[in-house]
Length: 213
Picture 1 (tube, helix red, strand yellow):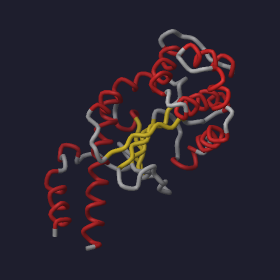
Picture 2 (cartoon, one colour):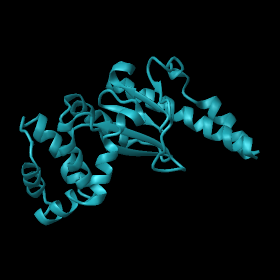
Picture 3 (cartoon, rainbow, N blue to C red):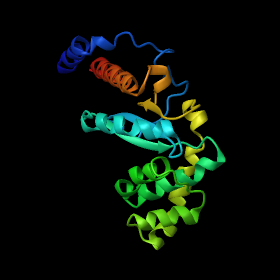
C-alpha cells in the first residue's frame, strides 16, 4: 500500500512545467539501455572531453546543479574518446580518479587548456601537469600505466556503440536516455531535461515496486 501511495504522490507532484519535453526532440532514448554504477540510485552520466570548449563552458553550470543534486541521484563522469587524440586526456582523468585527485586535476586541467590556452599533447606534458598539482611522479607513472586505467580507457572508446554518442558534452540518464545542449536548447535547459528524466525514472521505479507487491 505504501508503494502505491508513493507512486500516486510522484505522479501528482512531478513538475508539470517540463511536460513539453519530448523524446526525439529534447532528448533521445538509447537503443540498448546500458548498465549503471548504482542499482539503487538514478545515474546521471556526463560524457566529456577536456579539449572541448563546450564542455569547459558547461562545467560551471553543471557544478551549480550538483550543489543541489537529489539524494537518490548519483553523478558520474566519463571522458569520451571519439578520436585518437582524445585518448591521452581520457587516461589522465582516470589516473586522477584512481589517485583520488579529481579535485586537484579536473578544473585546473580545463582551465589550463581553455583559459590559459596551453596544450598537453604528450604523456610527459601530462605528467608534469599532475606533478605541478600535487601528484607524485611515481604515483602518476604507476597509475597511468595500470591495467585499471587502461581498461576504463578502452571502455571510453566504445561510447559510440554504448550511447550513440556523436559529440560532447552529453548527459546520459540512468543508461536509458541522452540529451545535449543542442537538443535541449542550451546548457541550463539541458539540465531541466535531466530533472524531467530523473522524475520519469522515479515514477517508473515506483510503478515497478508497486506492481511487485
